[in-house]
Length: 351
Image (cartoon, rainbow, N blue to C red; front, side):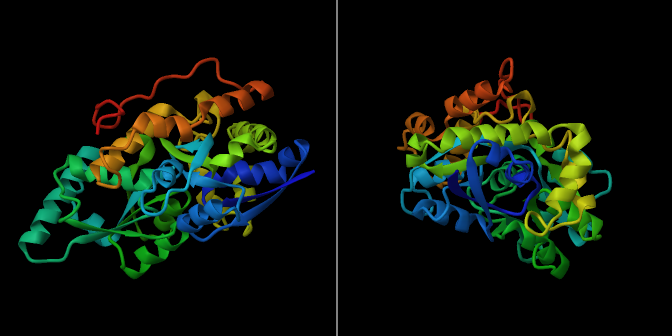
């Protein structure tokens, strides 16, 4: 047996790792895997960088950012598999939700109402609203920024963004430290079931089948003999996760303290149409997604314009490795559908 240590954050989309362990998919590929539950995305990045983790459940832009040296030293990484699409959302506190008109229902209407409320607060000399995101290099950060900016909100002046590990966001809503959060499942559902707020946006509305998580590893792992069996095991686990008849069992598995540690009733709602692990090519890291992420990094001054985006993407996003695993397991898609537009109808790569 070959040994591996994989990191993850307690979120519903760590499911492929949990299932591969619990259902014997790792063992079936001759792998002895230790899953390491980590406290934050920064910890995941740093442990992969120094080799304390062989690979990890990662935010979809993280490997790109690390390889570009955004926010720290250059740490070359690869993303050989996408783990899930969609699954995140924005929850507004009760206080903020109640300040917005009930007639605001669409993403555009809610964002416009937020923009008007923010203008009103600024005119009255009140401090900016505070929103929590999980990491600077995340779909969560970019979706929240894009959504508010489309309504005319100045992200540098009008709101305060803070980074908070996903499981701690519910407590921040409860104590009033933040006015809203953008976080992955199940924590929006935990918050709303606890009467702490209202979900205003789901990333499946913002960008249907939009990227969220990948498997990330150091660049040298691309040549590691353990990578192909690891990908095969995870592909099989992803396919298992998408079977409707498995959803109750999957929710109960993830509810265990070693994995997500939230009530199964809060985990189950995202399983199905909201959070997709395998079908429609969800496991393939899409170069188009990487281009959009880099466009957002440039837009928000996280990377410089001089960066060679195509060269970076080619090094980091490795659909060839995912497709090889899908072919080897007989689980590959017949074809890959190009990414569709965002909620505003603009092409996916619009900066």
